[in-house]
Length: 240
Image (cartoon, rainbow, N blue to C red; front, side, top):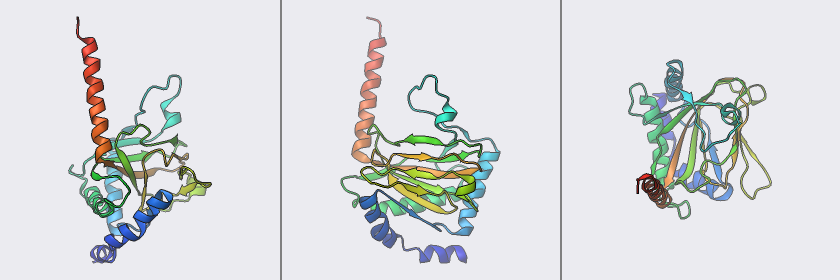
């Protein structure tokens, strides 16, 4: 069976220790092609397309307020959050379990970060109307996100025609990294200020699935600050 053969040939430990860890530590990002193989990748793509056609993807939200600026001018994607346990997400669940195994093998070797949990998966679509996502940092304020993983699902993608490149601006480097969102490509990069990045305008439907892995200590501290802030705000609203 092509699926089983592909999985057996993919040495996850060697991939994690010989490639992902060294590249993250040295240049801050790493990508791998032909991650799941054609058969499973097609299954993931079909499930994402079904979510899109069923109108389950909604406009991505912005953090904070930007008065006078259209949301579409900042980010033009439509998204849905999934755990993988939902009906119709079996292939997405398989993808997530595979990425989890890889990151678990990397954990403990990524500097001081202790990774024990991740976000739900964000299924995203840029509709192909020239929208993108302006230069930003996933985790600018120590919310716990440590590593960003993006799996791309776009067959026959031609960046010259379709755009949609993810451009990373690695901190302290004299170069940028242009990542084309091609089918069955898996990308890893640091989520914090080391990797500002942008999604350039897309002129064809562009699908991706993103998950964020959390640094346990930073995540716990971010939750504590949020609880303290919420409690303080509630106290101020109590009549004296």
